[in-house]
Length: 159
Image (cartoon, rainbow, N blue to C red; front, top):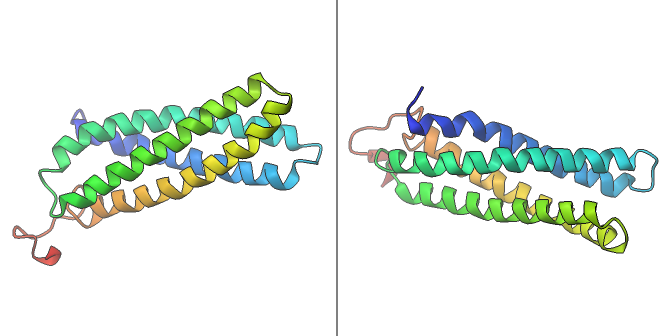
């Protein structure tokens, strides 16, 4: 269990799940923002986003460590590079959303009301990019031999 590349899958599912749920809560807030329970949705959005970004950066850093091990064992290394690129793009979107969310909490007046929809747009973009990054990560694990599937020695199926 102390192998570096095993820490990444330990954290990745928490980050993906929490951040995608925060995006769904953001959509719910947009739909129900005039209702009495909207403040609860807004609080839940912030709580999930802040928790998710912590897990995300742990996942990203452990993924960087896993990259150095896995890149030597897979059949199609460009898939791993694409996975890393989309994860990095997701990191920027979710980090910007977190910073904007914190700013909207500090300045609740006009600035906060303008920033909340921006946070939700960033969350939706982040949910899309993290989903695609997850798809590429699953390809690395299940098709490329980065974890579960072990291809033939000559990687014959990837020509």
